[in-house]
Length: 150
Image 1 (cartoon, rainbow, N blue to C red):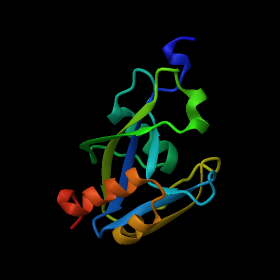
Image 2 (cartoon, rainbow, N blue to C red):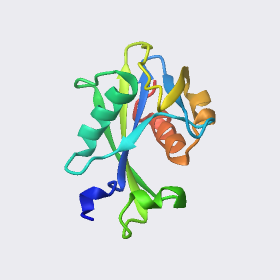
Image 3 (cartoon, rainbow, N blue to C red):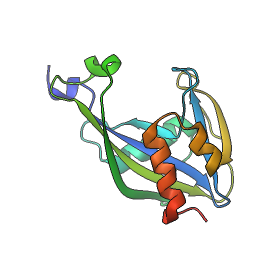
C-alpha cells in the first residue's frame, strides 16, 4: 500500500467560542460519552489550516471566513491500538494542530448525525470539565491563560 492508502497521522482541534466566553462542545456518537471540540484528520496534501476549515464546516456547518486563528501549538500523542490498522506501520504518534474560532454570539451548529449526537454552549470552566481528551482540555486551558478569552 502507498502512504496515501493509510490515514495521515496528523489532526486538527478547533475550539469554537463566543465573545462572551461560551465554548461549543459536541458529544460523539462513539464513544457515547465523549465530549469534544471540532476535530479531524488532515488529508494527504492538505495543510493544517485547510483541514481546520474543512472539519469546522463538516462538523458544524460554520464557515470560518478570516476568523480562524492558528494558535501555533501542536501536541503529539500515541495512536491507540484500536486505531492502529488505519495508519502505516511506521506511524506511532499523531500530531494535533490547534486552532480557535471566535464568534460574536452562539450559533446553532449543524451536526453530522453519524459523528455527533448533541451539542452544548458552555462556560470555559465547564468545557474543561466536559472535554474527554487531555489535548482538548489543554487547548481550552491555553485559551483561558491569555490567548483569547476575555
